[in-house]
Image 1: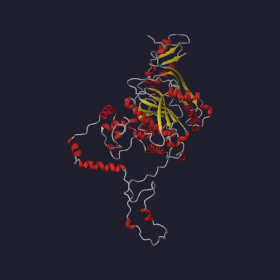
Image 2: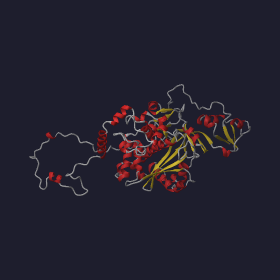
Image 3: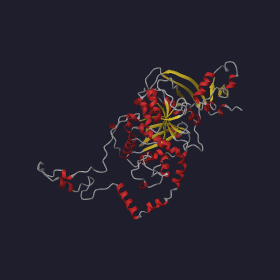
Image 4: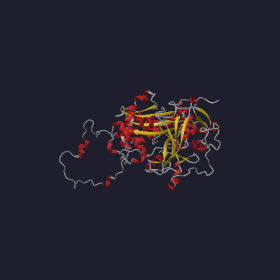
Length: 535
C-alpha cells in the first residue's frame, strides 16, 4: 500500500550532468563536469550512503563530479581517527594555542594568514635544552691578562648579590629543579622502599585492579583497537589503548598524571584538555548548535555568525560584499536537507547538521559547519575571523574536529571516520588533506576505500585513476538493468517507475536513460529508498 507523500523521508530532484562550468581549482572556464540533485528531504543514513559514493552537499544541493571527464577529479577523502597521529607541525599549532590561551604570548605578525595547513611554514622555536652540553673546563683560559680592568663590582660579586624580589634567581639558594624530575625521584624512592615488590608481582603474573570506568572503556573499545596507536608510545595496556581510542587522557579518565609513563607523547586529547582549562589569560569555548533557525541558540547567534562569514569571504576569498549577504549565508551554510535523528545508536547530540562555534573571551572567532552521520563526522565548511589567522584556525579546527570524532566514537562505535570533503591531487593547494592520516581515498569505479599511500603514485601518473588494485572488483551496489521497482513521485503520488511508464501519454515518456543514470550514481540501496521527482 502506497504511503502519503508526507510519510516519505527522502525526496530528490535529479539534474543530469552540468557540463562545461568554471573550475575554481585550476581556473578553467569550461572544464568542470558534475551531476547534481536538489534534496528536499534526506535521512542521515541515505546521505551517509551518498557520500560513500562520492556525493557532497552545498546547502540543499548535492553534487557528484563526473570523475573521468572533469578537469580536476575530486576524490572523497576520510581520516581514520582511531589511529590518528599528530605531526610535528600540528603539535606546534596546538602548543601555540596553549601559549596564547595561557598568557597571550603570540604576536599576530608572527604567523601569516593561512587557510590550508600547507600554507603554514613557521620556523621551529628554539627550545631550552633540559641538559647543558658538557664543557671541558680545563681548556678554558683562566688568565685575565687580556681582559681590561672594569671599575665597579666584579661579575663574581654581582653573582653573589641576592637579586631584587621578583627579579632572577637567588644565588645563595640551590637551583630549582623541575617538577617532573622531583616526581620521578619520589617514584624511584617509593619503588626502592617496596623492595622490588612491583617486579615480583609482575613475575608472578599479578597486576593492580583496573578501575571500573577504565574496564568498561577497554571492553567497549576492544573490537576497534589498533596496534598503530601503540607504536609511538611503546607497549600500552588495553585500558590505555581504550582511553586513547575513546579520546580520553589520563586526567580525563581519573588517573593521576604521575601514573603516566615517562616520555609518553601527548595525545590530541591532552592538548584539548589544556585548552578547556579556562584558567589562563584567554578562554576558548566550543559550542555545538543544531543548524536550524528553530533552535534558540542558533537563532540568537545567527547575525553574528553571518557577519563573521561575510568578513571571512571578503578577506580570504576576495568575494564582493554583495555575494556574502545573509540570504546567501543561509542558503549555503544554514539550509540542510538532513533530518535530525536521535536513536539508541546515535551519539548524545544525535545525527544531523550542526555549527560548531569557537568563542574566544565571548567573541565568535570561527565556525565549523558539520554533518554528524552514522559512520562519520563530515566537515562541510569552515569560516573564521581573519584577525585571528595567527592561530592557524584552519588547522586547529580540523584537529578539534578529529578529537570531536573520537569523542563521538565513545558513544556511537560505528562513527569512527572524519570526512574532509574532496582530495584533488592535480591541485597542489588541496594536497594538504593527506596530512590528516591515516587517510583513505574512495575509488571512483568500485566505491571501495583505498589507503592514500597506495593511491598517490597512480595519481602522479594520471589525474583520474581507478584506485582499487583488485582488477576483478566491481561496484557491489550497482542497480543493474531492472528499473521497474525504483521509486518516483509523480503528481504528488509515490509509485514505482514501472507503473509510471504505464501511465501513457507525456507522463509515460521514456525516461529510462535519465533514471538509469540516477540509479547508477546513487546506488541501488538509495535508489530503492528515495523518491525521484518526475514532472
